[in-house]
Image (cartoon, rainbow over all chains, first blue to last red; front, side, top):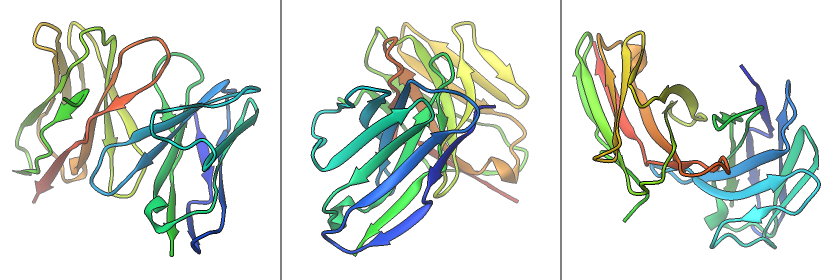
Length: 114
Length: 110
């Protein structure tokens, strides 16, 4: 099946710093990628839709200036958490699809902000 | 009301047992339905799509009831390796956005 990778898998940063998470589709091109966040024992929540070559579409309640998304190529989308705070600590997962509605997920990035 | 709701469980069952659980969705325009499996601290992985006529994949059977707006997953002959959280996923349009349930936790014991 399709493979989606994420890097880093785990990151610990200090409050106030920025963290960049990469999402790559390894064996297919993805014009659209999705970024999710999952807090412990809660469902995945869609944060934004990343569109190659254009601005991301953010879900209601997600600050676009805090969560910067760049989809510079058909195989790479990045999510930058700017001025991270402890409440941003979460599991961030990206997904993409070569075709159709089924999504393939990256392995996730566990962010801990101290 | 949440768009997708699941019984969180946990369902604790012995090996070899059958376990079944449902997921309800609120948007009658929902078109595509999936079950994903998520292991602790890992990403969700597609388990199976859910078709209108119902479908089976080995020990797993998925059903869709459009009239009552729910989907179900049944696991026969449970294995220890089936222990996981099962996420119900619904897509209501062609924009490929997924709505997730919070998951149903299944624990299979020896």
